[in-house]
Length: 264
Picture 1 (cartoon, one colour):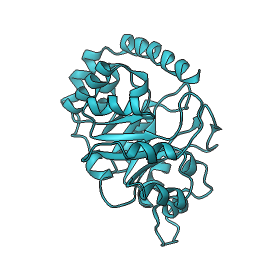
Picture 2 (cartoon, one colour):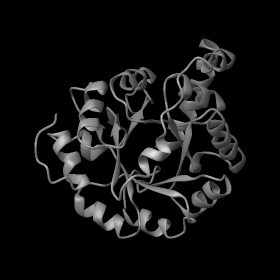
Picture 3 (cartoon, helix red, strand yellow):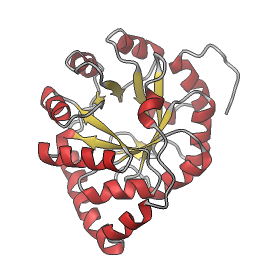
């Protein structure tokens, strides 16, 4: 399965990265880096908060955009109402780079979520060094103890962990880890099919006081309204924006902004 291939490749990648730059070097750099931007606070504002995603390609859809300029895309998103940005940094399967996050941080003031397949504490320290304000932790790909460890490590160095789930078992892991920001992925990472009812059904079981983020498969304002009726107020949207002819206009449409001026 594609998910197994991605995770195996990620373990191998981390081994290589540790040889190129030891974890001790990353730890030493953290003290000189500005404090992270407040991702959790940014995504909790309003009744339709959109985290806009920047990714070049995906295993299921291929290349999203032929002209791919991450800082320029980030600026469009910021001007058109995104509350935060999600940045794919996996190279092998999504065409991203760690340097994309570095360059985006220099171009915008929004908090940045590093979206990757995190499997090792090394990647948490790396996220902080390259300017990530939040990090994606996928419950499905790790045991409970590792998820809890990585979540607590991220928080200890000022990074907000967004714990992603797709099933009740995943959700139980996230809750047991103490996650306060829970992303519900409507995409099955084994088949790459999407179904919005995943968010609707799982959101009903998320304890009070947690922020729920619906991820993947959100294409229209009607989709957002359907999710909002289930009590969800924050949405992570990638493919719909990345493939839109006018990304700024599409973002405003999804957010319900009636102002049709072009801010690209």
